[in-house]
Image (cartoon, rainbow, N blue to C red; front, side, top):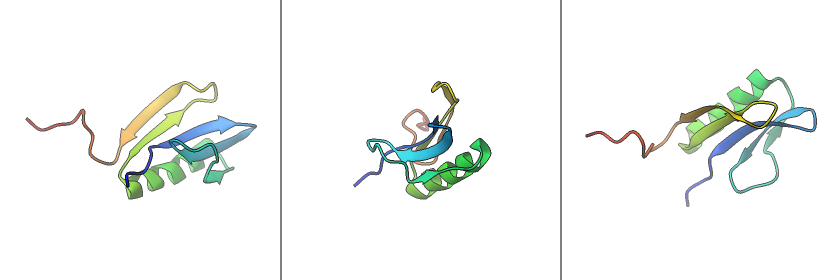
Length: 74
């Protein structure tokens, strides 16, 4: 069963990480840099995309750690 992408985001005064399709974060607290490191590790382990958001909710960065359909050899 494929796992959802990982999202690092800011909410209620905290940086958090959650999997796509879930409401509950699996990690919360610390600095943005620390939250990104936790999210990156989870995305790499699950071989999914890591979406990093700014405090205002806009996407700052996306990194793929799995089979990226946009990166097809050819």
